[in-house]
Length: 383
Image 1 (cartoon, rainbow, N blue to C red):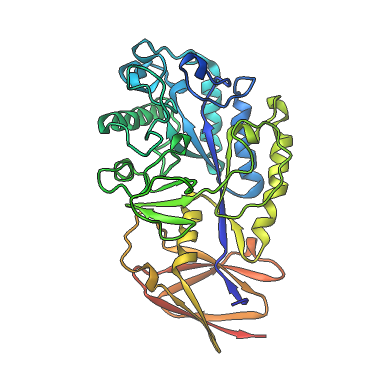
Image 2: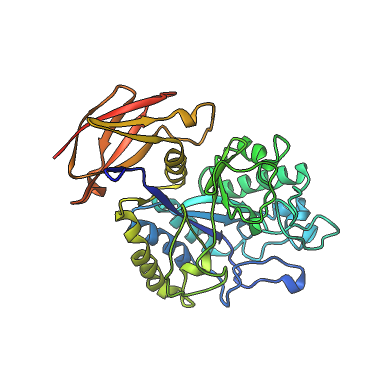
């Protein structure tokens, strides 16, 4: 049906935000960090906000928070850092923390704080580094009390730095996760803390059940989205930015957005903006305003069947029946070609034109669905 589309929304997801030390220290039993030859700077947070501003988006920045620990509380959680009970955060007195925190608060419309982890790895077996924080490499979740301790510590460090509420989005460190593990699995624990969405590459992920599609699935109460393959390796600074996004996530790691000289981060941001802008204006794609809208859009794209009729279009929601997902919003976006003039809709939906994202070729319309509506009709006429 070329008159109407439910476009694929692309959300930006940036891993490993929050480190202050740039270099990894795996040779000293320490964590994988950003693996760059400089420490991080508040201007690195400004880069995320600038990317969001120029694209009209709220990129998801998945945070590691150990180096934001101002009270050395993590010594009480020895499996969370390479120093164990001897933990002493070398950055806790740095004025850069307050400077960066102010950027995150002031630019909240353009930086979505996501949950990544505390120390990225796990040091629970004799203090020896293991990958990764939430699961091991074959999908075994870390001990439940450890997981709860890490989540509570994440919440406490967020609060002491005034970085906002607990995140609704999650990216597993090292992309190690067990999908569909049931009520004893991580997804149900995350839900207790308010998490609604998570994303990681599906390829090679341990699974107890199959996802609903190759692009996403329902991991217990969470909407889980297939990240696919990033365009660049995790520690690449200053990329040229090229390639093709084939799914709902433009995944990257923090260095991919940055320059060796933080004062020149804007050059890299400009390349990403130029690369991503066309996805907003294609008939079959759009840029997600945030994770909630992007992931919900993906579910509706899968779950809504469009049936063309002489006088309009039938929207069939029956594929969504039976799913109770806290993160599924009650609206989604469609694009309708300009030679089609929308007259009205049935009572099950309400339509709002998004004039800022309409073009000379199509009209962008937000469809708000009544709860549990199984179908709806858009009345139109063709010019």
